[in-house]
Amino acid sequence: MDIIFHHPTFDTQFWLDGMQQQLPGATVRQWHPGDNQPADYALVWHPPVEMLSGRRELKGVFALGAGVDSILSKLQAHPDMLPDGVPLFRLEDTGMALQMQEYAVSQVLHWFRRFDDYQALKQQAKWQPLEDYRREDFTIGLLGAGVLGGKVAESLAAWGFPVRCWSRSKKNYPGVTSYAGTEELSAFLNGTRVLINLLPNTPQTVGIINSQLLEQLADEAFIMNLARGVHLVENDLLAALESGKVKGAMLDVFAKEPLPANSPLWKHPRIAITPHLAAVTRPLEAMEYIAKTIREIEKGESPSGQVSLHNGY
Ligand SMILES: NC(=O)C1=CN([C@@H]2O[C@H](COP(=O)(O)OP(=O)(O)OC[C@H]3O[C@@H](n4cnc5c(N)ncnc54)[C@H](O)[C@@H]3O)[C@@H](O)[C@H]2O)C=CC1
Ligand SMILES: O=C(O)C(=O)CO
Image (tube, rainbow, N blue to C red; front, side, top):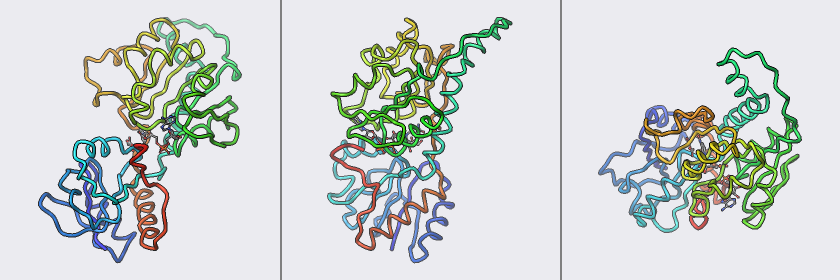
């Protein structure tokens, strides 16, 4: 079995050795421009078009992340990049859910215990206890309730918050109220105080966090964008912060990355920023997962994690 690998920033040798250990019978090589030798599987992130196009022999392409929007947008521009019938897989969890849980739980508790307000009072040397927020006024809503959103929802429910989620189809997570489809979006938003976004980037979800959506949230809402920058209309968020409808935001992803130095988001006192690292690919877990999936494909099984080209995620 032959495996080709391309990632613009990962430690390639570490991955070649690691995959070799996971699949001792395989030959794993770094792909270089001009390499047209046959391959059974490709492991990629931001792949050059010529790496995959014309490779009808491939039994699977693995995206080395959870979101496949960048691969799919390239595929739109170059439809022959992924030969017909070659399945595209993505990473399901592989250590990312725990990182998302850490990120979301710590920030929700930060807002719930009003640490932002106390930090602002501290700047004025003010010793001033504030009224506690009540859990019943702190409903948390997950936009997107798949592999990552579902786990985040469960971890926040375990902290005793009212938690709800919104997805394409109904979910059954313990302690989490499920809403599904565009017809239930307004009901989901109504009363949501903390909105956490873990949707994939698709034509249906681009710009979903806009002024019309923000207006439907509970007053003094909080926004956490952990998915993709294009989901959020940044100027609408700034306007909602200005009006007081939104009290604070924590953003990990941006329409343009790295976030340009002149972006007004940097300087806003009620916006916290991290540089797209809410959850990163954990190589060992990812390699184990990919090897398991390859073994299932080789046995003729249908492993999970296959991207629906129709749904776009
Ligand atoms: N900031 C970061 O470091 C990272 C961000 N991500 C982002 O998180 C996203 C989610 O990842 P997973 O949970 O693994 O994806 P997933 O595919 O398991 O879950 C997606 C969820 O969104 C829902 N959904 C999709 N389209 C919808 C629509 N039109 N209306 C309503 N619900 C819809 C699905 O029903 C599902 O519940 C990724 O696509 C990626 O963009 C992933 C990893 C790291
Ligand atoms: O896996 C993903 O989709 C990511 O955004 C990784 O940072």
